[in-house]
Length: 69
Image (cartoon, rainbow, N blue to C red; front, side, top):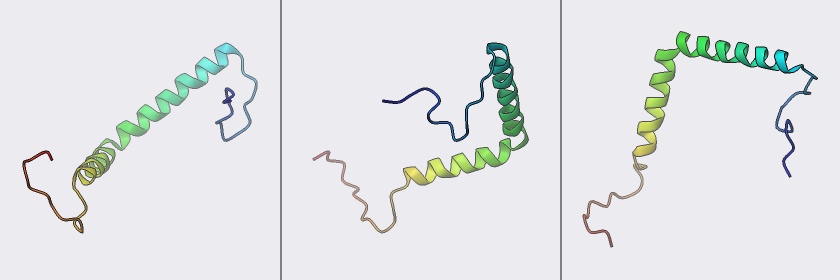
Protein backbone atom coordinates (compact mmCIF):
# COMPACT_ATOMS: atom_id res chain seq x y z
CA UNK A 1 0.00 0.00 0.00
CA UNK A 2 1.20 3.51 -0.82
CA UNK A 3 1.79 5.69 2.21
CA UNK A 4 1.60 9.49 1.99
CA UNK A 5 5.04 11.02 1.57
CA UNK A 6 6.66 7.71 0.67
CA UNK A 7 7.46 8.90 -2.84
CA UNK A 8 9.52 11.86 -1.60
CA UNK A 9 13.20 11.41 -2.34
CA UNK A 10 14.24 13.15 0.87
CA UNK A 11 13.20 13.03 4.49
CA UNK A 12 9.89 14.74 5.12
CA UNK A 13 10.42 17.42 7.75
CA UNK A 14 7.66 18.32 10.17
CA UNK A 15 6.01 21.54 8.96
CA UNK A 16 3.12 23.53 10.30
CA UNK A 17 0.11 23.90 8.04
CA UNK A 18 1.00 27.52 7.34
CA UNK A 19 4.63 26.71 6.55
CA UNK A 20 3.60 23.88 4.21
CA UNK A 21 1.24 26.27 2.37
CA UNK A 22 3.94 28.96 2.15
CA UNK A 23 6.49 26.47 0.86
CA UNK A 24 4.05 25.21 -1.76
CA UNK A 25 3.37 28.79 -2.90
CA UNK A 26 7.12 29.39 -3.16
CA UNK A 27 7.60 26.23 -5.22
CA UNK A 28 4.78 27.23 -7.59
CA UNK A 29 6.38 30.66 -8.02
CA UNK A 30 9.77 29.03 -8.64
CA UNK A 31 8.36 26.69 -11.31
CA UNK A 32 6.37 29.52 -12.91
CA UNK A 33 9.50 31.68 -13.05
CA UNK A 34 11.45 28.82 -14.61
CA UNK A 35 8.73 28.21 -17.20
CA UNK A 36 8.62 31.91 -18.06
CA UNK A 37 12.40 32.16 -18.39
CA UNK A 38 12.70 29.07 -20.59
CA UNK A 39 9.32 29.16 -22.37
CA UNK A 40 10.74 29.15 -25.90
CA UNK A 41 13.07 26.23 -25.22
CA UNK A 42 10.41 24.20 -23.42
CA UNK A 43 7.89 24.89 -26.18
CA UNK A 44 10.36 23.73 -28.86
CA UNK A 45 11.25 20.61 -26.90
CA UNK A 46 7.67 19.50 -26.26
CA UNK A 47 6.58 20.34 -29.81
CA UNK A 48 9.48 18.28 -31.16
CA UNK A 49 8.76 15.38 -28.82
CA UNK A 50 5.07 15.44 -29.74
CA UNK A 51 5.73 15.47 -33.48
CA UNK A 52 8.27 12.66 -33.23
CA UNK A 53 5.75 10.55 -31.28
CA UNK A 54 3.23 11.01 -34.11
CA UNK A 55 5.73 9.93 -36.76
CA UNK A 56 6.09 6.16 -37.18
CA UNK A 57 9.65 4.80 -37.19
CA UNK A 58 11.18 4.94 -40.66
CA UNK A 59 12.29 1.28 -40.57
CA UNK A 60 8.66 0.07 -40.50
CA UNK A 61 6.71 -0.13 -43.76
CA UNK A 62 3.98 2.44 -44.22
CA UNK A 63 0.47 1.06 -44.63
CA UNK A 64 -1.42 3.51 -46.84
CA UNK A 65 -4.51 1.33 -47.24
CA UNK A 66 -7.72 3.05 -46.24
CA UNK A 67 -9.37 -0.22 -45.28
CA UNK A 68 -9.63 -0.69 -41.51
CA UNK A 69 -9.20 -4.50 -41.69
